[in-house]
Length: 128
Image (cartoon, rainbow, N blue to C red):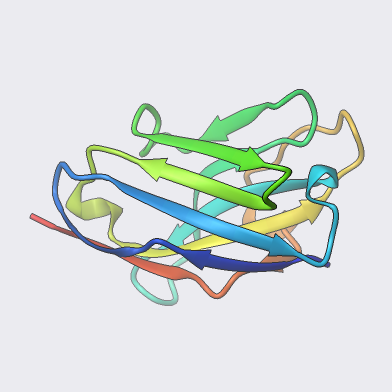
């Protein structure tokens, strides 16, 4: 399994932007699908934010962030980034990078239980 380390979280005013980054090690990034999930408050089920498919560059976004987030991967740098704009107080939470190995052509999943590797999370706080 790959190891994931997130960074880029912080405190931002509503309407602002943040770019989260996930550094991947211990595996070939091009053979994995990656996702971003968030959790707020602690103990609540993790909410799907965005995911990137190894096949054909497919991406998916959660309904609550569609149009405000962009997920991107850099296979050469082994990073998965999440650019977030027009942030709202309800975007506050701990954001986790996650991954699972996928055969070529398999559909992209948005279910947290399908992801086998998780980072430690990075806190995002949006002030109103």
